[in-house]
Amino acid sequence: MMQAIYDRLKDRFQLGALDVRSRKGLAFVDLRREFLRPVLTELRDVEGFTHLILLTAVDWIEDERFQLTYLLNNRQKNLDLGLRLRLDRNLAIGETIHDLWPTAATYQRELREMFGIAFPGSPRVDEEFILEGWTDMPPYRRDFDTLAYSQQTHADREGRETSDPREFMKQILYPKD
Amino acid sequence: MKHMDPNFRKDTKTEFPQREELKPRKVTTPDGQVIDIEPLQDYFCQEPPKVHQKSYFKIVEDFYNWCRAESLWILAFGTGCGAIEMRPLMTPRFDAYRYGIQWRATPRQANLLMISGYLSVKTLKRAIRTYEQMQGPKYVVGLGSCTINGGMYWDSYNTIKKLEEYLPVDLYIAGCMPRPEALLAGFMELKKKIKAGNAEGANKYAEKFDWYKANQKAVIKDWDMPDYNW
Image (cartoon, rainbow over all chains, first blue to last red; front, side):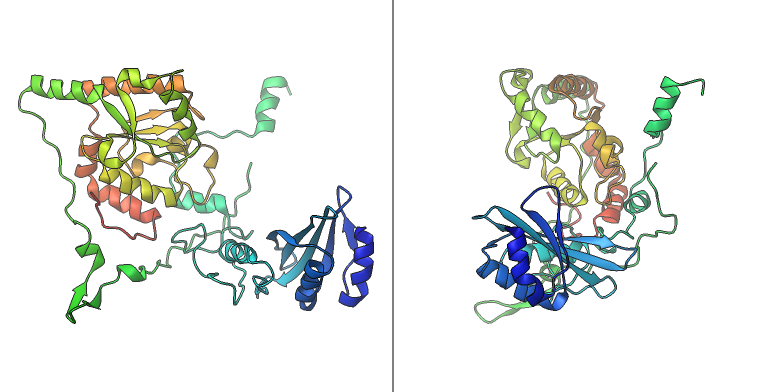
């Protein structure tokens, strides 16, 4: 069923290969940026993917890319389709889809704060979402080192020990080695 | 162990701009008068806290302390997962009410603030505000390893590690999370401390007020309240 939908859309929107994961009815597709809005509109209005489950981002720091994942659900046919879109990491500007799904505005606000991806035109996107008075770089970016930040901000209590679980169990189980 | 980037430096230069509604401004009243408004001065009292003097006679002070210890009223303000341990404490299974301990809805009615678990910087602001609104003599108890040394949030960018740098903690109860029995033992310990006259957190806060404020402002960048709100 997913294959039939994919075949109908593949040539018109130059979709990437269909990537079926873990279970039937869940698939991912790579997408080119200029086709994002036409594909989403088509899926929502014609193919019955009426529900935006989530919009999230992955930081591919090695490739200098952010990956946006739009996960859609077709409730009638019990299908989930993820659309993957890659953005340039240094010029992270996404396209807002709050007029297609109003809930997307909240996701975009979160991505703006946690990843620093801009969504021009999205309502209230520049307001604080979870963080309050945050002045450093967006904390979900992978070059933000949360351990280093924590140690430079909050002092450790003296006497705190950490031990590597592997070394610790090795000492207990095989003390002679 | 966890990898840490040795070159990472936290941004210490950027300051968070003051909120628009807190800036001094001119306002036209309904009858046409133009008046100056300075929200942090006008809406709040700027008086710092004062040290509460002990009674002149020791026997009177001991009587006061006995009274204080026998009516610990806890503010129902749960900051983390530890708040869930309060519900069995209130209800007949553990029944903390038999020790004169009860839960109150507002800071004005309470004299014991339980920091029940991890404190994010955002919640810390509310906790400070709540603590300062409580009437003295007041006590703070930190629950669980999160308030002691960060616990499982030891590498979190947004969670404080040592509670006593921000609020005067009278007692810590260790555990992750401490069971209701541990909390009851902690309350008994706190009672002993109060009866001995050693639970002087509120006075310590008043004495070292500048130190506490400096610590608080170091982590709370968006300081949108007066220095002492009571």
